[in-house]
Image (cartoon, rainbow, N blue to C red; front, side, top):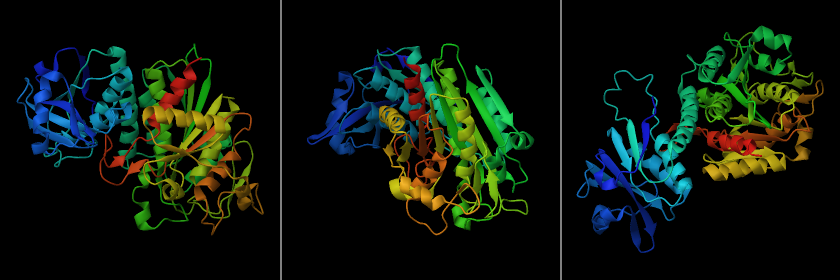
Length: 487
């Protein structure tokens, strides 16, 4: 889907000819309060009759008794009009007001931070994936193709920034939504090249022969059971004015059957999303180039399809990771950490200022943090920077520890380390991160983000988030790249 056009307008909101003009209400102990130009003050008299409360995700549509728009909608902000609340409210309004081609927002905004949040949320709420719909498409009510925001704040740079964020989120969601029959290691590599086209980005791709020649045994081992061989993709944005270098490593399992440690049938449904980490780091690098950020970004996409076959890696096989460290594979369904190990070693060889890996790594992340938070662990300073970026963008992240005592659980009788502890049910998310730490460079700050719980929304829609892929951590990592770009 093409994102809607987004326009800033200084025209008075009462003159808007949009199909629906969106105003807002804040929930207070004394009842809802209208958030709009004084010209619309009379609408508040009807809030009780209309059932307007101002609660989040509430959208109430009413006839346009004031102004030139076709109709008016009141979107709930919640109790406080913060940038986060505005982002969610704008996204919720666009998501729910489907079938209208032209929407306009007219909310009095305090500053450009609030404006940026509203612009971003409006675009994010418009996302839909229709590529595989045919007969059902005609009856689908889609989001607006034109959105106006009435404000005297901001300029075209504000719009361009919001578009770059929304395009990054769209790229991730489109890739995750694509069926695994069409998205496999080679096609994901090709789509990475397409996403970087016409941008100051270099893309390098390792095929299976190059992976073997360069010692990427983790990626090869995970992918060797599939008829569609693995790939490693390096996406490099290196502006001349960059003074710092941020490396991003993403898990790209285009479909995860569990390999010979086969998942139950029900657990396999949804496993096309296991390449979300790779899609995320690609999208962040592309967004950095579009925004011309003065920071070097290198994204490593570690891509394989984890399939069972006569050539698949067996439990008790030993893989040699890039750099020489050996791993005894005790669980072929603990494959994400194997491809990431290769990527972490390769990223560290370039001596970046920091490395962040992103992965739908463990079901234990969902058990620990539910379906809206992602976990951050690793170097304390870098984790704090990730958390600050998450807070600034309204993302939900939580720090988790890396207990040293867990390392003993991964001891192997035949290799340097095992990839799992069979029978252990405790601290699965932390144990996976402890494994990854073995493949980092202690001199380079490293953070691991486990997005397994929040990368896919299997519940009801909320804010700008529909059921399906969420794009979680994309906005936080773009903000982290922006923070790295500042002196």
